[in-house]
Length: 162
Image 1 (cartoon, rainbow, N blue to C red):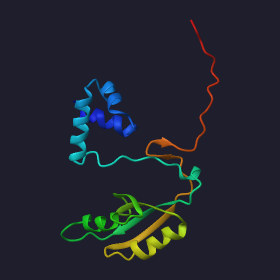
Image 2 (image 1 turned 30 degrees about the horizontal axis):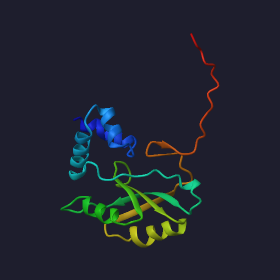
Image 3 (image 1 turned 135 degrees about the vertical axis):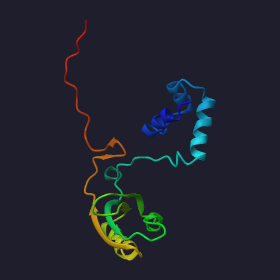
Image 4 (image 1 turned 30 degrees about the vertical axis):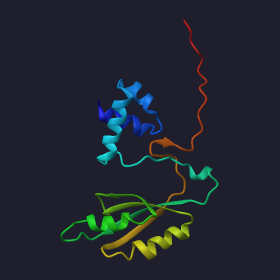
């Protein structure tokens, strides 16, 4: 079974049923189930997530993107500091980057004050963190490949029939 094709199908819509996946991939349901189990057991599939448009949920929610400059440790490079930062529940995404900062950290909270308290009281004081730059997200237009804010344009083209 082509595990990569299965991964692409799940990445685009994790709610697809095993029956639908088997039809799409031309495999049996049992083969699909076994492949999914293998991919989960081997930490290739590590979670299933829902994309939420918090602006429409009428719920207090703030996202921030934080650039973190850090000093690597002699024995582990950036891995130990990255692990300490990633374990905070406020952190939703974290990447080691090239450029002026070492890490790109995505953080969520209920208010700007909550996020700024996290940065000032938990993140910035961590050993190995040298500097932070926090940018608050004002509006999301697209998240995880899903467009959130644009209305569907009406197609005003005429139907041509033979």
